[in-house]
Amino acid sequence: MVFKCIVNGNLIESKTGRVYEVRNPANTKEIVGRVPLLSGEEVEQAIVSAHRAFKEWSTTPPAKRAEIIKKGVEIARKKLEEIARLLTLENGKTLKEAKEEVKASLDSIEYFAEGALRILGETYPTNSENRLSIVVKQPVGVVSAIVPWNYPLLLLAWKIGPALTTGCTVVAKPAHVTPLSTLKMAECFLEAGLPAGVLNIVTGDAREIGKVLLTHPLIAKIAFTGSTNTGRMIMKEAADTVKRLTLELGGNCPLVVFEDADLKEAVKGAVRRAFRNAGQVCNAINRIYVHRSIYKDFLDLFLEETKKIRVGNGLREDVDMGPLTTEEGWKRVKEYVEEAVAKGAKILYGGKKPEGEEYEKGYFFEPTILVDTDHSMKVVKEEVFGPTAPVMTFDTFDEAIEKANDTNYGLVAYVYTKDLGKALRASLLIESGTVGVNNVSGGEYPYPYGGWKQSGFGVENSHHVFDEYLNIKHIRIDF
Image (cartoon, rainbow, N blue to C red; front, side, top):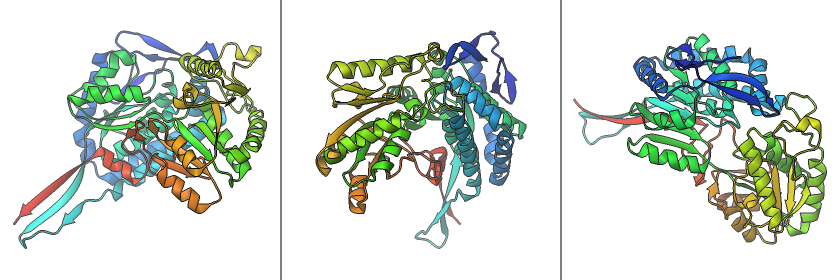
């Protein structure tokens, strides 16, 4: 099936006729769809159309904008099953997780739309009875939204939701391996009456069209989720035209389990957040620190629960974890595990591709528990983006905090303890944008989400996100 890009309200193919084949990571011989490989010139046309649409959309009453956006959400909800199936086919995650992502994405967009009437200005007192100072907020302009493949719908929603609500127009680029569900969902907003040019979805080779999306003078803001290395490159490219940036970058998130933790709950959280979506989550648990006094008990239970994870094609109802999405990702996980073993780590469970005919054609990797690991190993110090869980010990509170903070990243951290004082101290001392205490819910739409250190800057989600897409203007009037 050939999908089409969305430019200026139209469904288009590339003028060159070039297409990219999207393959099923559970069976790489299966082509699940084809998308256009747009040229840089065609992407520029999308940017120009977004710029033209900005004047009308930005002056459309907020309530009307919200009405159109929410109608798009309503239409998409009726196609949830279809969109979720496409997501599983292109990404590999289980159909259950895909349905959850579609629902969460639409819930997020609806939440943002409902905030349209709560974007408020201010008035300031002045030193004269004949003077008035007011502050208004106005949309920044055209937004370039660049979305990764691990949560293509949710991370798109986190960008287009606040952008469209505030009156910005958007040119969005999904990852080349997961564009199908994005295109299908975006069509729902066209059907809802979103004006031409307000939301454009372009696909193509990042090397060819990426620079246009980062440097074009009509782009006012870039919203990006992806690796820290790519984030650095985007900052450099955007510098010449001083674009606004929101960057949600690498994770390398720690889990700290104190001696008084509820062990069953801690293990439940570890299994969920280390292996969900095959570990391909920005807020996945990358490293686990357990108090020495409960280390063996934790490991025994962690191993027991990890062994229950069923790996396979995400379309199967009995599967808990699908394949990795890309060959590059599979090779990286394999390399990091092998490097750790070469440095003295031991594989307690997993560590390889599962055996069996059903796994031969896909990017499958077993959920993997490693012990005897340390911070010299890539599997500990880097964002693996795979189903690996190195487990280490600590003896004191200070040591746990030091180890948790021994990273260039600061996106999310997790702490398990029954001691409220310890929980609060740890939460304040850990250098991270989000801390989950006795839970692993690291990123949900009502709450602010953003990184510290080299995990990026800017906020997604919550009411704070609107300011990322608004300019503040002070108007001083003498009368």
